[in-house]
Amino acid sequence: LHGERSRFMGLAPAKAPTQAPEPPKNLATAITADEPTAKAILDAEGPEAMARWVRSLDRVLVTDTTMRDAHQSLLATRVRTIDLVEGAAVASKLLAKAFSFECWGGATFDVAYRFLTEDPWERLRALRKACPNVCLQMLIRGANAVGYTSYPDNVVTKFVELAADAGMDVFRIFDCFN
Image 1 (cartoon, rainbow, N blue to C red):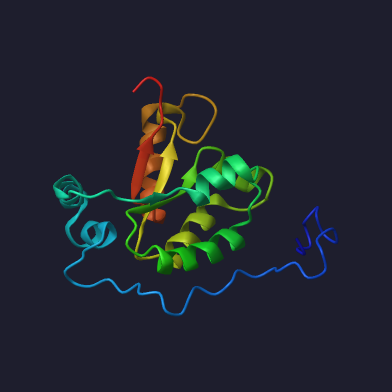
Image 2: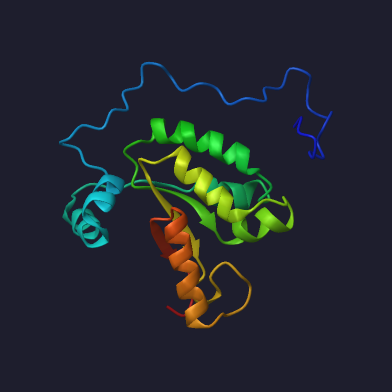
């Protein structure tokens, strides 16, 4: 609302908050040794172990899609990296036991550099740093990856490798042909 590039600059009510509220102080977010998380298992034992763990559970796992779907569908993909990172830091405490945060993919990659003039790779690295305890998940459009046309398999494979190296843990494929 008050950023130098905001088209809404000066239009917000004078008392509109510009900082996220602090998480509740009494919220118990500690992860105990007897309650492993998907991220802890993935980091310690690898993807096959995490998949076995998921299949062994008799409860629902939660994926929060706010940072991708709400950002994309409700807010026209115009949420800045700094705002997403601040929200991710709070979410990593409030939702410490979540399976994942879906924060990348679809139009969010394209819009980061096209409209927000931000580096989507830097965004991913910053989100990973802000929430090291929860898996990061992306929506990938199969052969289209995060683009609007089909790419050769080697391009998609390299993109996935680079995304994993930058901090992505889970790739959710959205492809009408798969």
